[in-house]
Length: 615
Image (tube, rainbow, N blue to C red; front, side):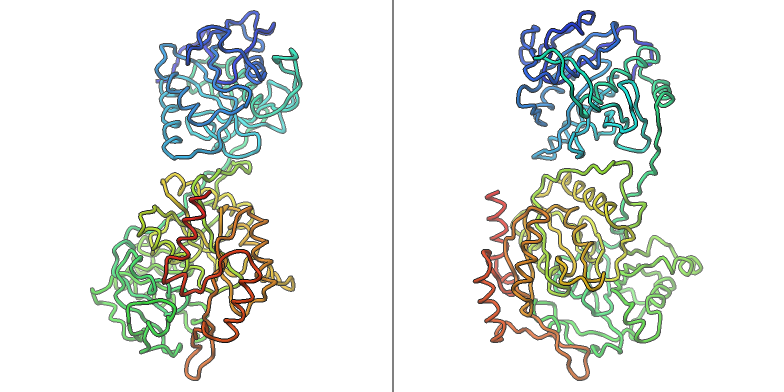
């Protein structure tokens, strides 16, 4: 329970680099904690000056406090997550009840998610026991621990605080308080004083302010009312809504797919990975695909041989299916001058079917309501400004899990197919795979998140907002204990020209910077210029500081055929293709694979495992 009585003598625990004797502490008792044999003042001597500076700022103006010093790091300024877990475990078992625990440092990285969970648990235990935990955020601006935990007061530097007593109060932000961290004179080990700045000292200044209120109010809600009242500024951020993930009914649903287009292809090519059961596939007569074999239309992948059926023959009252997965239909609707998605929404309403659509369903909300249907049975992946984390002040999570990206030189070259193949092979080998899909079908494969920024995008945000959200998605996957995280971009990665905004792939940079891959696979076409491929490879390496594991050549060309929109032809034995592959191998220093080799053998996944095992 939190203490609610007024505290006369405040016990402050400072976890830092130790302390030295200094005249600023003449009226303040300094007590070692006994941690790892730290029984005497000689055991907690500060070799860096950092702990002395922090303690001096905290003690400033106070005589009715006791400073308990736990030396957790030394000259290297490094306190690892294991070090802090060990220290807080000791504190939890201590007979002393500390009123305030100050940690003027931040930990940005961890090897195992269990370490972070253990650290959070210890902080929660200490908070529940009545201690007020105050921690600094990382000086470089990253999200750091324990400051980011809800049970810890996270302190950052304010650009509005003009002296050590001023601070800003934040609401609905992981940064709770912003205090004075500017250049200031502090006690030091040698020389006796120095001038310094940083979040560590903003945190110490904030703890100093909190002590004054703690002595009069105690650790209770009234304390925070006083703190808020005395702030030089108060900022309130709107809470963010979590991204709406896959509906429960999608798992193990009995589905029909329509129309037979690029986005639907992957569901049929990798049907074994789809979390629902595919009953049938349909299309409209305008596409000239009715009656054709799915297996023949997808020559690069072995698929269940289905026949594409006419949409007009669907028995909507049949119990053989309960869910419709509808691909993009804007272009098809325009061609046949009908709102096909509206028709499907209406059919689903009248026949109590679920609808998972790739296109925006918001224009049809009133129709769904007018039919008395349940809105929760209608879903489409989308991102809005309400999903963006607020009050972060630009802070991003460090990602601990290995991250592999699949990028390309153009659209429609099998990037998602390669991701699914890697996902399948890695999972079969026993690896735990996390994944953000940029295709709206990603939730159909059980992926962790969808960021549908490609064709007919349902992402209503851009720029830094997307970086914040994608980074949070990656962190959430990080905490799920995965062995590797897969991501993939859309279309081309590097601008081919600058004649039109549509050719400048800003969203690709947002996505890559948000996911921060360690390595990538580059998809290319046999008609790409070698110079552009090399520019793309070097551009990604320079932008993200990662390595290219392999280049995969997509061998499928679309050729017009009478009576059909197009026919896909595999040109892998084409003389031009073979010449292109030979020249590419001579021009780059990474393995070059055919698409069939990447899909039908373990060569690509072996390269992935070899890279991450060595790094």
